[in-house]
Amino acid sequence: MAEVQAVKDNDTIRLIGHLLSVRFNPQMADVWNIGLNLALRISDLLSIRFEDIHGNRLIIRESKTGKVANIQLNTKTLELISRIQTQYPTHTYLFQSHRCQQIKHKAPQPLSRRAVSMAFQQVGKEVNITLGTHSMRKTRGYFLYQATKDIARVMKMLRHSSEGVTLRYIGITQDEVDKDFVSLEL
Image: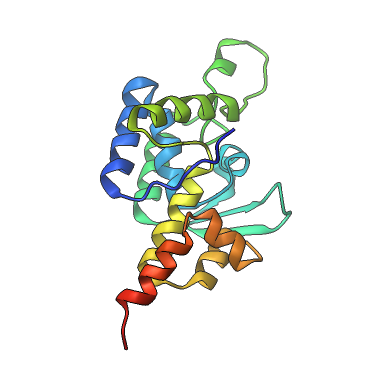
C-alpha cells in the first residue's frame, strides 16, 4: 500500500472537496474540509460527538495516544459544524452514518473509516494524488510548516515527538530543505 500524500496546493484542496461532494455526498466533503482544519487522525475525527464541542473548542481524548486534544475551532470549522448540527439536530456524531437511521433500534454510529478511505482513494485517482484518510492531517501540517518554517510548532499541532517523523509525515524532502538553504541567504 502506497504512503498517502499531503495535498500541497489550495486549488487541489478545493477540487478534492468538490469531487467528494459530487461523486459521493456532501458529508464526505465535510469530512475532508473539517479534517483539514482539525488535523486529527481519522479514528478521532469520525468519533467526534456534538457533546465534545464546547463553544469554539473541541475537546477529545485521542484513541491512539490517550492524550487530550484541546483544539480551538476556526471560523470555517465552526460554520461547517453549525450547518451539520442544524441539518441533523438529533444526531449524536458529527459524521453520523445514515445507514444506522434505516435500522430501527440500532445505536447511532459514525461513518466508517473504510467508507471514507474508499471515497478518498477514488477521488485521489481522479486528481492523480495518493490520497487517503491521513492526507488531511498531513496537508494541515505541510501548510503550517510552509507558513512558519517552525517544525516544533507542527510537531505540537500533530502531537508528534520527533522532528524527523514530522518532516517525513508532512512530505518535506531533503531536496526541499536543501532548496531552503540555497534560497535564503543572510
